[in-house]
Image (cartoon, each protein chain N blue to C red):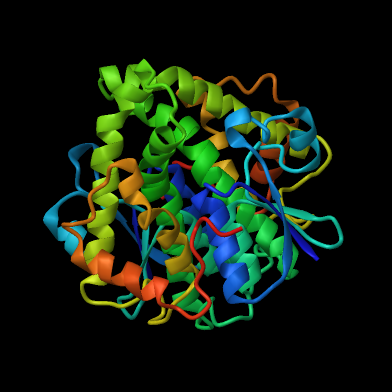
Amino acid sequence: MLTLHDNLTSGNGYKCRLLLALLKIPYRRIEYDIDRQETRTQEFLTKVNPNGRIPVLELENGKRLAESNAIIWYLAEGTPYLPADRFARARALSWMCFEQYSHEPNIATVRYWITHKLPMTPERQAALPGKREQGYAALDVMERHLSSKDWFAGGQFSIADIALYAYTHVAGEGGFDLKPYPAVRAWLGRVADRPGHIPITQG
Amino acid sequence: MLTLHDNLTSGNGYKCRLLLALLKIPYRRIEYDIDRQETRTQEFLTKVNPNGRIPVLELENGKRLAESNAIIWYLAEGTPYLPADRFARARALSWMCFEQYSHEPNIATVRYWITHKLPMTPERQAALPGKREQGYAALDVMERHLSSKDWFAGGQFSIADIALYAYTHVAGEGGFDLKPYPAVRAWLGRVADRPGHIPITQG
């Protein structure tokens, strides 16, 4: 059976949990308390992920795979969640790279600071306006795309949608207002309506 | 013929140029002056990339693909630069996600500030110590991996190595000292020794 090293509040973990649920793949989940730095222990760094982060997917043969978007790519290969067309597949990956570079470090990071009640250090205080601006810029790019398309890649619901859904649907928890983004909100509804959908809180 | 929307100082652009050279694929290159915000003009945002960034690969049919790692994935599919084994392919992608999330925003960003002579604003000043720390943490993870392996994924030179090489080999330009990283330095040498290798300055 697959094992997912995980944290229930993590949108990155949720990408994996959501796809595993949609694919009806059974798995064992190990929860780490990230507030208590349980992913930075010597044991975790040695045995699970030297980069000190969840999620990590562990195969039955003990091999481990880090990085949420690599995990969902691995799980989606050969399924309808990864476009069969070469260019559409690359477009899916392009949106997933956008998510990790332009979206997650802004929207997810601010949500993390707030929901995990991290101290507002001078470094975070200085970074916040830029993260707000860049987070909204990422939402602008999504809104523009979704104003003429239902899904992010290949005209179908794919792991690109799952990757972007994870932190967009809880953007409000980080103080991002989705009201000016009607196309994004409609798309969030379409994702949530997929058969087999589970919420972020479900382990 | 393929068109690469590019900037010669960009390591992200270099990933594409290097793989195109290794694959001996001819292409046309369009240079943008990022200091003059040429990738943020209304025309660029409308016609090339709504996210305002290079590199962008444009196919002969006019379709466009943004995000360096998606571009090299697209180009590498079906070639020896993308592992044929499913798990090794996922591991390659995992390292490419690591590059975009844990490596590039620290090492490449500081290099960009310095080499493009950007003003050291209070926001950048506050972010610098964290970027130094996290940049070295990324190099630590790489050193640990390379101390027992020649390449990043699948036991072969792949696009994971190309993605990580791009900004590691110029980390010194951002003030990162690679002396304490002998395995990283040996790997940089192996990449540079590949037949068909080109330097970052070659368009």
